[in-house]
Length: 165
Length: 121
Image 1 (cartoon, chains in turn orange, blue):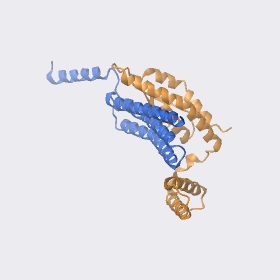
Image 2 (cartoon, one colour):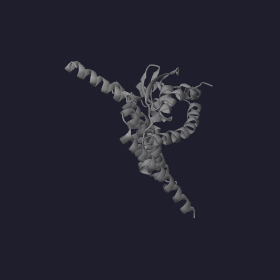
Image 3 (cartoon, chains in turn green, cyan):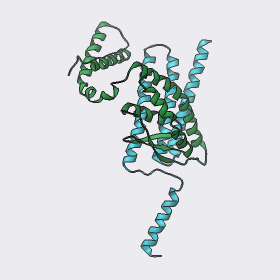
Image 4 (cartoon, chains in turn green, purple):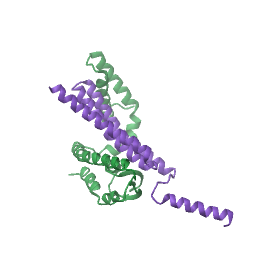
């Protein structure tokens, strides 16, 4: 319950924008109600922010911009992944040979690992299954995708996002 | 004229999106185990729902409804990946085995061994 905190104000701003989008009006009473509700909700969820903010602390605008660039680059992979799944589904013989591999990453911190797992899931033929420390268990639908993953292009991409300079 | 072009673009987006959703459903039915089914479910859901929502946003033009659709898209795309990961993690933690080519032969061999042990043939 500390509404002088910066994090609470950021959350209140996000909730307020969401409120405007949902109610579709700029009337004074509506905006006042929105501000009140945003402040109440963000104060009530203060304990959640306090306990789970630590991984978001060193996020700045440059990292966010690089993340957007990488997302644009990943969109092509998403199309490729879908056509690949489609080919395997439509084939009467169903050419799959699944394997679970351990992928060890040297990325520091929680947020880079989460981003890496999401990118792995978006790539064709791979699915991030579980975390144990530094090891990610990845389910590959065919062997060639495991080899592709081991070239570590994806890890370099995520490393580039979270680089300091 | 402009309306015809924009409507045809919308129809294109919607039909490609629905096609990919259909591919995902066929994948869920046809694939042999939970992990391969998740491949079909997560990937095809992301692209299919994304294309359908983009089509609807183009149809709606610039308005509050388009912003609402954008919010739905953001929530859907960010939660779909996490939900797929959570299901796979739960499956691994409960020791569900994953399917591979030789597994059926292996099970048959084990059954044969058990049969021999029981009936001493």
